[in-house]
Image 1 (cartoon, one colour):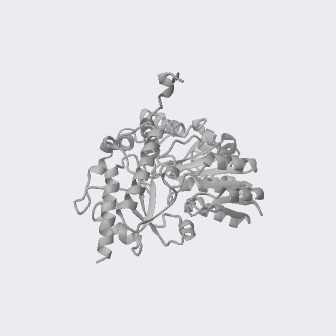
Image 2 (spheres, rainbow, N blue to C red):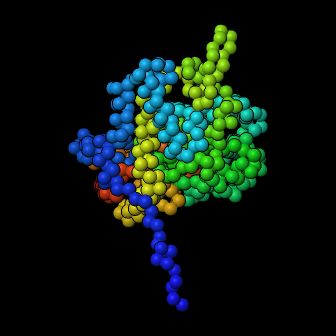
Image 3 (cartoon, one colour):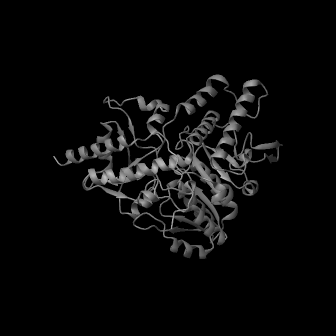
Length: 425
């Protein structure tokens, strides 16, 4: 039978692409060299990302052209500062498809956002015998605040275990939900394994059991499309410094009804509507949670970072980093004999590769690589329980971003072979 399909029916849409070689021109630091005169090979973006000119100029513009406080002055530069600050809130909301900008609370980082929820929501809703479910792969920021809370409120923590490949064991999660937890909190993307968790499925399962859901999106928002409405979560947190923005910036997104029911986290200026000697009335959201003068420049920079990422396209960024992860895994396995890598295959992970060289401490690996201008992270990456799960004292970690190119992974492979050669002398 003849093929009667129309030509357009056979056309497959090609994934969007970014050109990291062109993008690198936007990052001034990549033109610098280390103390040995070696060009910078930055493979530590999971810790802190580099900043593009658009972010640097946004921060400098505030500091040099309209540096003033917000929500107070009625003179020109104060109104300009307020407008820029609130525009950054709108951009941040757009990046994660929040229903409204008022549901974005500016904080210093994801850690502060989780502490805000633990303090404000947790101390009103967690009591004796109540359960919070976490995972074995959590960053300390999404573990320690809940430890403090359950110790104070006499609650319980339970943990979803992971497979040797770094994937959550969903059958155990389903069993834990029979405990009727009040909250389930988990990372969207593991900062050590790179695992991308099935957040929508996890959220639906939690809601069916009557639990609220908090997601740590610090390693997701810069790298993959995030839609909080499609995910259906109740709280979503992320840091600016991991998404090309300034340090000291970040956001908590939460459903309006939750924010309105939660008491303030901090007290003082700007989070009040009226103050009397013996009582005060709180401001509307999100200002109820933003006491005192914030880091205005940093949050303006966060908005610029959000716009920069959206300009590149989050789908394109995801394709780029998935290809880098695959290339890194294949290259390191082929070029570095004996290397041990952790986590799932490239299709299930973000742009993070943690590894060890047998008999060589990760700190030594990182120090020798630094001589060649190669920056990686060595240690436990704020995931000590996860390292205990794999019986590891530490790992080395290479992590990628929009400016990472395959040639840098090649340089890493050459550098690791040199490390091996040095220790075999």
